[in-house]
Length: 433
Image 1 (cartoon, rainbow, N blue to C red):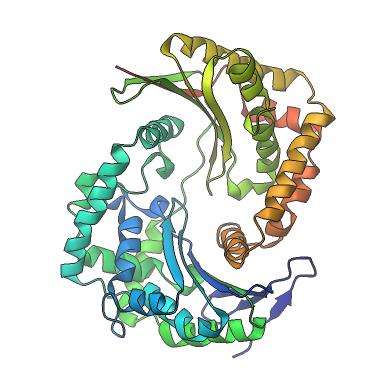
Image 2 (tube, rainbow, N blue to C red):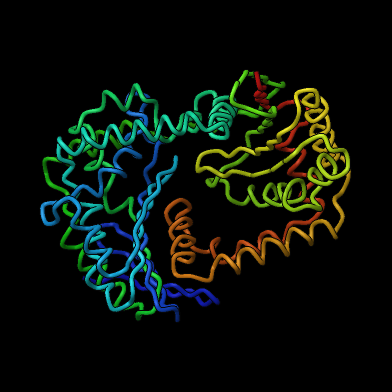
């Protein structure tokens, strides 16, 4: 088996290895006495139809219910015996499984992680038991005011894109899913070309790659009976197009009796990871407006005028399209003043150049967070897996601070004018009873 081994000459220097079956392996030795294996599958709720919304997350639960080689519960028992840790997460654009072990245990435990993820048996009885666990998770989410607010904001932000739907799916959909549907979903999407395996820790890169490659070569085979189903799913699933910017203010209001204060969310449609170079200026603008006590909205709305108890700003970059997301908590009587003030701040971004001092504050914050977020094997593995899986390139993972540093006042004004119209956005208001 031959494959090109690439090395990146940077402070971070992982090795990239491609298997003939399409699987990508990234490995890096790091002088910390742990090894993290992260398996990134480029499949999340965005690939689901409405009829199976929540399947990717439900499958994440079922992954740990055993394989032909491992009885249900055996994986967790063997992990815990060695003091290792494992977990998983599902988003709109990916599903992520990881394990962190001592270096001496990696060769034994990593193959178990690969086995449970790619050979999940998904038995009918365990499926029915786990269905109730997932439904309880949905109910807890529905009881959470912050999640309710976010869900309604996403339903306002997008008319058609799958990001408008919850990752967990609706209870009514989960209640009618069949185990065979999940087995088909797993066979269709958990395929080598959709997988990035990242191993970072205190073992030589060649050893990390060899352990993963050997297990994946043994584990992943596409049975002939699955090929037609896989081709059919891939043919039917074509990526939807980004939605046009708002042309007016689209307003939705709700009464939520669980709230003590009102909440307001304002959203703009902005580029996603498939237009990565367009996201950096928006990241800086989010920092200028809402990151830290000296940011514009925090200083003005909370510290000086006392209009809000909290305010936050995020540039959320999904794969197909992102949202520039501003949220605040305030008294009901302050809602209009808060919305007007935020719109005025957006207008100011379009007409006044941001000072170099403000931009430099964000640059320093980003650089420091990048360094602090790169200190453990799991940090590094997450960074590499995210960019390689979703963007198909490791270079942005290394150079994010440099891209932020390159943004100047003119770039930021241009981004604000292009994407953050103060007279056209989505707004969700949640009022207490």
